[in-house]
Image 1 (spheres, rainbow, N blue to C red):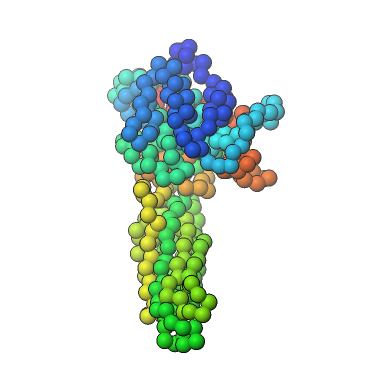
Image 2 (spheres, rainbow, N blue to C red; image 1 turned 90 degrees about the vertical axis):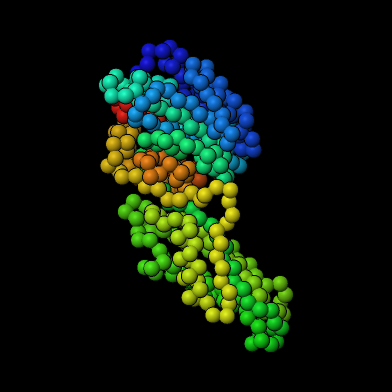
Length: 376
């Protein structure tokens, strides 16, 4: 570890205590300014690129390890509060666990680990880059713009200190069924798009049971899922409707891509509705690609090293993350805090909190793992 007094002085809990009080749900400017100030105070140059990413690097050579998380948060608002003591001490507030707690832990490792001159000299060569994105909770334009060429990636999210090696992707799209208007009294003269929804919903329900349509069960993530979430159609109670739309939510597993899913689902629905009903399926338009599924070998050195340092298990993550953009490079999701506990939701909820002891433990684990991976 470095002997630099400023580096040693970094306290992840003190940083988190400040960060949670800075609002970043509508505008991340103030939080980004705090982050840049924190980095530059410790003698490291920080830049903000055109996509709003905050970037800083230390060292050079290989391996190049990227530490990524985000500074944007979501509603509802949760007032800052710090209470308890010992293992029961918590910091409450919007973003405390998603993902300012993980950010604090990654910063601790970034500042503390020793980096040499790079190359094969055996003197601790390697590079660590901090890449903090501004809009993970929405469109991930920041992550999509990153071009880091990292060898290993650690993505900060609330995992309860488990090392997460895989996550399902999330796609969304709308099925459009088209028919022909007619008077309800003469229904045979038209084509009822709403009635065709019966077959379309059956197709959605059976999609993953069809070998040719869906990918096999994944060894880490299990089976994919497909859920209809919104349906609409018809304008008048005495008229055959000529349109019906069904929005679906897809939680994918590797190796399925968004376009493969689009083509396969449209064909599957086409086979389940009358021939005279039009079928079209389009993915929801986005500025950036959907977050696809990712997976890393649980036996990879990155996984084993971080899991050993944290003293915790290895498992999949239950939410889609920007790790999707870094795979297939070896990537893990890790951090303090939980998405939910025994009482209910924590992240994205009105009781968001993170345990102070977990923040410190995560910081120690990241620092130890980086030191091991960089050979320091």
